[in-house]
Structure formats: C-alpha cells, structure tokens
Image 1 (cartoon, chains in turn purple, red, orange):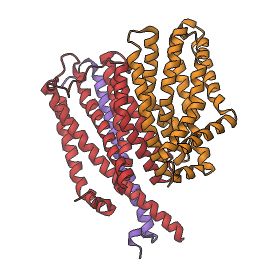
Image 2 (image 1 turned 180 degrees about the horizontal axis):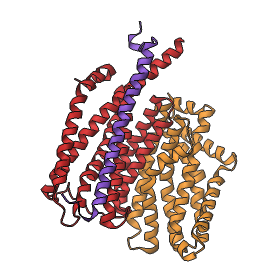
Image 3 (image 1 turned 45 degrees about the vertical axis):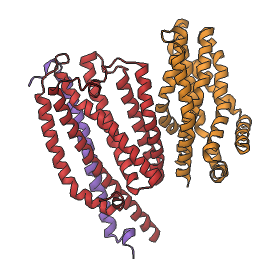
Image 4 (image 1 turned 120 degrees about the vertical axis):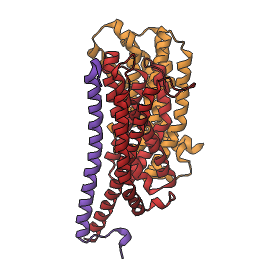
Length: 54
Length: 241
Length: 222
C-alpha cells in the first residue's frame, strides 16, 4: 500500500482521529473508575442510597 | 423492555453491564474490518491516496449530525416527558458529539491542504460544520456553568431544540453564501456517484463509527448516572451529619 | 392586549429613564465603528467597500451585548415571578419585553447607522440599503438573543455565556443582511431574494424566540 505524495497528511488525519478516540475512551474509563471509587468510599462510610433508606 | 422500564436507573445500569462487552467487541471487529477495507481501497483517479481521509472525515460528519438528532430527541424527553434518562442521555452525548465534529473539521482541513492548497477554505460545508461545532461548544458551556445539574439539563435541552430548528437554516444560508465544495455526491437522486470500491469501505467505517458512538454513549451515560448517585448520597450525608 | 401594552410601556420607560439605556447601545455601536479604521488603516476606498459589513457586525454586537440584562433586573426584584404566574401568557410577556428592548436598542441603531455610514465612506444609495436591511434584520437579532437572555438568567450567568450561545444562531441573519446590502451596492444578485429571506428570518425568530424563551424561563425557574 503506497500513500502517494501526500502520505504525511493521511497519516496525520488518522493520528488525529486515533488521538480523539483514545481521549474519549480515556475520559469514559477514568470517569467510571473515579465514580466507582467515590461511591465505594461513601458506602463504606455508611451512606445509603435514597431507594434503600429504611 | 419498554422505554419506561429504563427510567429506573438500576435497571438501565444492569442492561448496560450486560450489553457493553458485546458492543466493545463489535466495535473493535468493525474497526478492524473497516480499516482493512479502507487500506485496500483503490486510489481515486483525481485525489490519489488522500481519498483515504474521507473514510474518517465523512463518517465523523454523519455521526456528528446524528448525535445532534439524538440530543434533540433527548431534549424532547427532558422537556415534554420528563424522562429521567433523557437528561443523562443528552449530557453524555454532548462531549462525544463535539469530539466527532472536531475530528471532522481537523481531517477535513488535512484533506484540504493537499487538495485545495490551504488548510482552511470558507466553503459552505466546512463552514456549516464549524457552526455546528460552535453550537456543541455552547451546549457544553451551558452544562459547565450550571450549578444545579437538572437546571443545566433543561437549559441545554432548550438550546439543543432551538439549534435543531436552526441547523437546516444555517446549512441553507451558508450554501447560499458560498459554494466551492464539490456537490452532494452520495445521497442524491439517481444513486451514489462514488465508485462502489470506495463506497463499501466508507459504509464499513461509518458502521464502525456508529458502534463506537453507541458504546461510548452508553458508557458515558453509566458514568453520569453514577455521578448523580454520588451527588445525592453526598447531599444526604451532609444533611444527616 | 392591555397587559401587553402596559408591560411594553413599563419596559420602555424603565430603559429610557435608567442611565440613558437607549443611548448606550448606539454609543457602543459608534465606538465599534470608530475602532475599525484604526485596525484597518484610513483607506477610504477599502472602508467604503467593507463599510456595510462593518455596520452589520457592529449592530449585531451592540444588540446582543445589550440583551444581557433583559431578564436579570426583573429576576432580582421579583417581577419575573409575577410574569410567570400572571394572566398574560408568558410567551406574550417575553414578546412585549423583547419588543420594548428592540424599540429602545435596535431602532436607535438603525437610526444612527446612516450617520456612521458617512464615517465609513458609504455612498447614499448603499446607505439606504444598509439602513433598510438593519431595520428588517435587527428584530431577528433581538428575538434570537431573547432565548440566550432567558437561558442565562435561569443559570444566574450572564455576559459572555449569552454571546457564546446566541452568536452561532445569528449566522443566517448576518449572511442575508450583508448579502442583501452588497446586492444593492454592487450586484450581481438582485436585492429582492436575500432581502425577502432576511424578512422571513425575522418573522421566524419572532415565533421561535418567544416560545423558546418562555420554555426556558418556565423550566428553569420553577
């Protein structure tokens, strides 16, 4: 596969798209572990969810 | 499962937990197939190998518009039906839509440099996408500045709906203002004009982007539900403490 | 309609009395237009060519920035709650407020535009076109901006947020306002079609603006 005279631009475009996708995935994954961590802390300290309140 | 059942966040989280691994696998496979097809696609006789940028640029543009459509439905859900999941869906979609629009703009610009000789031309379609990007940023700005998430969601819903009404008008006026870009070449009367050897990888990549979007959106919705749960628990703790 | 008229007159009187509200927009417009030659250089030929666009941009900024406090003072003194619960439909109430705002801010811009046109070396015939398009187009700016004003008051934020939200939506108005003017000055397109579309945009925003703003206020302030 040859990319012709404009290979730089094609590679750059794919690199940007990859960077954006990695950024989105990282945002989702890190956000998830952060929320799980805070939620775990809260439950450890005895906080209850509204629906489970007696 | 009816839409009303999903109003229960716990049930929705269960569904996400069951579906997400399959979606991730499907996305990875779809990208593997799509990228292979894109790499093996023949060069365009005019644009050479740069036509490969189209396999990113066009699906990103489609998904960016689809995302606004999804946000509009979610906005109706927020304002009319007060569906609790609609707020979450709208808020989770906005950053993904903005990122896709950004990808579309950057790849378009990198495509334009070898083809037109400059990174940016004020042609009709690029300009419409730029305005779409600004609208996405406006919605994000609303979410960021709102102290109360519910109030922010409703404000953003109004803006999204106004944007949905305005986007066709913006598209029309920008077309009127300047048309330098090539005309509409895929969806038009008389069938697509692009050769099937280019079109097939394009649709494969579009499917891969669609799966990626659905996966990211569901995962982001899950995060948003957890974030709200954390918020209510913290508030309750502050009350009892 | 008496409640509508009463609200309209109240808002006009408030703006006229409090700190020369009507003049402030026109003053801002004058300053923007004065700054342009400092940025571009005093080339009268160039200024004459781009003058209509400068006037349009200046009018857009002046009318949007002045919208910032449209609902804020009513929110602070509680009269917004009266409007929300009053007998007059909220859509009509916000229309009255926007109309009052246009009469005290938009209309002065249209009136001073020909004078500023002299500074920018715009000739007589072109100046008529600019004034006419501004007269037809500034209501659209006010009614689109109305949505932003309603959104920012529900979030207790103002200033730049309003401009960020609203400016992308004003792109069509700017496009057709400027191209109608250019059509009148240099052609080749006739003046009619872009001007008619500009009027259509104004009428559309007259409908969409109040409904969206009323929804934003109802949803945001409950």
